[in-house]
Image (cartoon, rainbow, N blue to C red; front, side):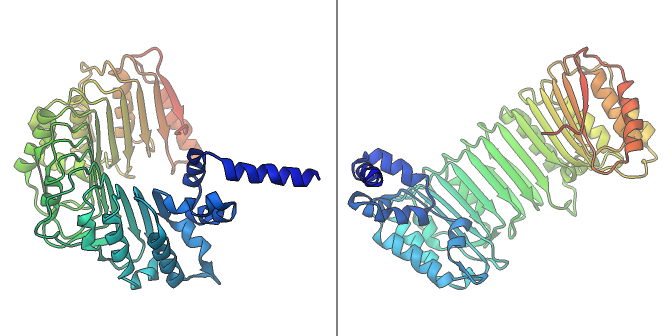
Length: 425
């Protein structure tokens, strides 16, 4: 009797639950589980077909895995049936394509065509196959897109009548091969773009960024030249070079640095080691005489401090950011010190002060002369420093103790400064 009453109450709940409650429940379920709710009651039978978010990711694939392999035919048919019976608009569409799934190149084109007619606002399509396939041109028909993320495709030129995505704010292009130089025209017509992430691309050596609403920019790959035209809203930049360019174009690089300092109010800067080598090779930072007065956080990764010029330009870059509150440095330490170490250390300006610096993280140090002098310098010029974190993955306990004793003996401009080892969060 008790079971019967409990079942009846549960049935009443499913039958009488407000639409908003049903919607929230379905939104938080994987789509395969959302589909199974159709058996709960008449009200739930078709409710999941009105979902505005359709996510076909790795978890969805797991449900279709049989005998250690994926059934792509079933996968493709399932998605096609869901879209065929779907009611209303789809705002968020996520599709993961695994390896041999890309042999069927027709369905994803049909799916995007369907979405372009149903007000889709966010599309994420990730291909894990080692061979890139063309992304369907229907992607350019999705005029209401606010967010677009593509990984592992070839991007062909858009139709001649394409005039951009007027509402696009977030664009991620990773492991993309560009057919023809279409990138500049693509973002030039996206005047609302706020976030641009471009990683590991091919088919494009010369990059032009013209995006008046852009706030966050991530560039990590191979490029021979970079130009900015309209970046007045830019607040965060992360740049990395996959390899150093064959030819050093010093004047053009100086122009880029000057423009970054004068045309926007950057608050976050992240540069990698190859880019810092480029700066060092041309004396770019030292010769620019720029100041990033609005930068609060500076991150420099994979620095080879033993190479001549890199440390000097590191100091110059730090001094170009007089108001930083956080400094994050990771180093690649060489076993042998550069013969010009003494000359680099002589460039330290102990009269310079970082009056707002409160936190420093240094990763990868092994206790070399240059590294210790850098730490000593930072402690001496940071009067409000609170925490200086260290992390090293390849140092013996004896060497760590020796380095710790040396570090603890350095004078500190801040009475609150603490040295903390291996405590990275």
